[in-house]
Image (cartoon, rainbow, N blue to C red):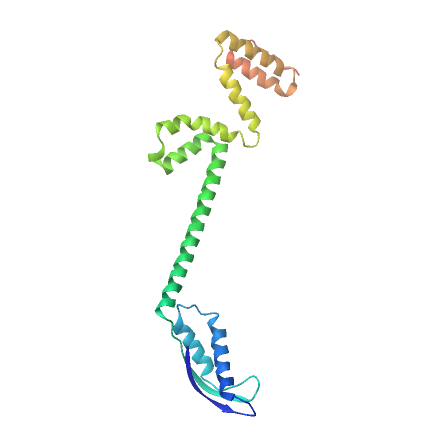
Amino acid sequence: MRADGQWQQRGRHRDPAAAAASYVIDAVASLALDCPLLAPARLEARANTLLGQPAVMPEGSSRLLWAAVHVNVTPEDFHDAQAELRHRARSRAHLQSQRKQVDHAVAYLNLLRADPTLAMVQQMLDSPNASTAEIVARFDAVAEKVAAYAPGGRWVRTVGLLEKTFGALDEDAQRYVVDRVCSALSEFRQTQEAAQHIRQEYQIGKLELGP
């Protein structure tokens, strides 16, 4: 920064010129706090607007008549400031991208817990080239493991265990298991209707609901 101007002595002061220069420096430094290094013309205009009129120094010993400020930024400093701005912009973009990825992952996880089939369809729409036959074949297993951590996950694991073991039994054994399960459900008022529906599905006897 370079400044030209005039001052006027008003009282006793050992170095009134230094007082005027100090006033100009402090004023420009205060304005520079709100002006980036990449905008020297803006700082220069604001400084000249402020210092282009008379002003009495704080100690009252001298008076600044006017000052003209010229702000220059070296090419090195200008380049460093540009590089810093680019770095900050890349950092903000990277952070926003990470947040979007996390939000997408959370939304996909919630969808997977709520409806694995719908989640698989969404995945195939988002990344059709990544949805290979192997991924589709393993999707059910992955969905079951994820759902096991959802609220009520104990039921998910129980149903998976029943499906795996029940499906391996022969037809007579399956009918026997169904009959035993329905007999147990029939002992409770809240599950009698479920027992009846299961018996009807497997065509095992009939259960009349009580009054």
